[in-house]
Each structure stands twice: as C-alpha cells, then as structure tokens.
Image (cartoon, rainbow, N blue to C red):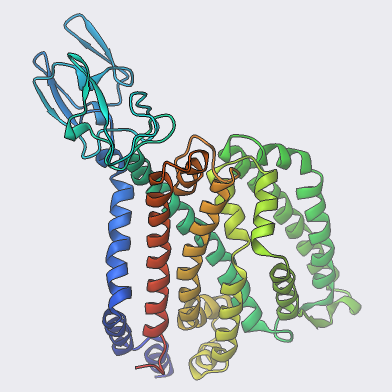
Length: 439
C-alpha cells in the first residue's frame, strides 16, 4: 500500500505537464522561437547539402556521379582523371546537373569576386572567358577579402555556433546539477562519514591532485596547447583516472583505519558551505576575463572552447538547483522514499532532481545564448576556434579589415542577434510555463 501511494506521489501529475506545455504554447514568441530553433538545427545538419561547390548530382560522359556525397578523391572516366576538389565543375560540359542551393563552399575562394557586394556587379569565368555571373552562381550575400561566399559561411557556421552553445552548456549542466543537488540535499549536517574515512579522503584528494595534475602539468599544458583535441581529452582522462585511483586507494585505507575507536566516530562534511564558497569565488572573478585568460593560453580548438565555457558557466545552474532541492528535500515524497529504504543517491537522481530542475532549465536556455555570444566574442578577437573553422564571430571579425564591406558585419551580426534572441525567448517561455503561480 505504501509502495503504491509513494509511486502516485512521486510521479509528476500528467495534468501539470499538459498545463505547462499549454502555457508555453500560449507564449507565442517562445513557441515561434522553438520552431525557428529547430529550423536552425535542420540547417546545421544539412549544411553540406545546402552550401557546396560540388554538384549534388551530375551526369558526365554517360556516367552518373554524386560528387558532393562521394568518398572518392578522383574519378577515372574514359581516360579522363577528375579530382573532385580541384575540378572546375562550373565550367565542365555536364549532360545533367543538380547544384546545391548555394553553389559555393565556405572555405573556397572566388578570386574574381573579392569584397563583392550582394548588390554589386559580380563576374564568372565561363566557357567564353570572363562574363557576368549567372544568377544560379551569384554570391547572394557578398564575399570576403579572399572571395569566400558569405552565405555559405553563415550556413556552415550555424553548426559550429549551435554546437558550441549546446555542448558547452551540456558540460555546465552536468556540473551545476550535480554540485547544486549535493549541496542542497545534504547541507552541512546530513553527509556523514567516519573520522578515519574523512581524513583519509581529505589526504587522498590532496595527493590525488598532486600526482594527477601537478606532476603531469607539463603533459597537460602540452596537450592543451596542441592541435589535437583528442589528445587533450586523453590527457585529462588520464589525470582524472589517477586522481580517482588515489582517492579510491585512500578510501580503502580509511575503512581499515576506521576500525580503531578514535577514527570510528562519525563526523559531518559541510558540503553545502564548501560548494557555496567555491561558487562565490568563481562569481567574484569576471567571467569574460576568466574565459579570455584561459582561451589565450590554450591552443584555439573547438573542444577546448566548449570545455572552457562549460566549466565557467555552471554556477547559476548550481545555485538555482541548490535552492530548489532545499525546498523539496523535506516534502512528503522524499520522506516516503527514505522510509522505503532507498539510497540517498537514488533519491537525489530519481526523485529530487526531476522535481527541482525547472528553474535550472530556464538558466540553461539563457546560458546557451550567453555561450554563443562568448564564442562570437572570442572568435572576433581571434582566440576562439581555429582559423580554418568558420564561425559567425570570425565572419564579423573579417569585416574589421574593410569597413566598406558592410555585408560582412550586417549579416553575421544579424545571425548572432537572431539566435541569441531565440534562446532568450525560449527561456522566458520556460520560465512562465514552469511557474505554478503564474497563469
């Protein structure tokens, strides 16, 4: 009977989910922004099809080709060798052809149209020499100083900008929810352990940090500054493995030591105070200055940038989660879970967090917008992602070299503005929908 009652109490009421979704749909700007956001995701996924200088389909000398989707580097056709990335497809006598909507690659140059305005005259190297560009090959939003197509750059930059925003906040969400839930649920009194285990773990953390990170500081620094993101992740994983191994070893030692009377006494770990003070320290440092300082030391890398932004953006999520868990942990369904003998970890993950995550969702939505702005700002000053990656911030940065090329600032700036506004509107919609006191 108690088990059945607990299940009914623990499950979020179906009518509340329906009510929250109904309230979100009534927030027209947020609901519309959600569809636009899904459209941007679709653009990011289909970027190679939407903007490509290779034909999607071509028929040449009786052979059916799919250059944009081919894994081959060279086509051998009737004694003619065609290298995909060097062939002048636009000048070839193709029997049939289907081009991408934007017939340019974001990284390829069109030297006939350097700093070409979207409204100005553009040129094309045709079969009869230099001629006025056909509409299907026109640079609709203009070009940069090396003739790269701006619209193709915006399309391919969508994937980079959205990926950095979403994955960096994914890291921040994991860290923030975990630390916030631990701090709110246990407080300063409820996380108890034996004195021997406590002092062993404390010593183990110090030695684990020393052997895992201090001793390997050169290897980590070298990996952090290298071009290989996988190498950096491997070195971080190795350091974390050493850190956890040392802590595990000292935990086993602590269990043995706790058999002695003096070390068997239980002590409380002030986890709430420790996490709260750490959050205050991070908040006291200007976030953008901290990110710029770390990014300037690290080698430009997409993975590095996501990790940097993620590890400096979790504090608000942790504070909101802590506040909600503090309210929830004394409610009846948590008491019922304890009475049923569930472990504290299961209660936090299965019961407390699902009911206390709503304010954090709003912070996450706003955080993604902030991450995109940070990435754009870092790319604008040249310390974001590697130069070969096309991002909206890097496109805006290209406009600094020629102030007459207004399109290089206007269109990427609009893309950043629209995307950030979308996330902010979605965040506002979530805030209103998840607020039980607001109709």
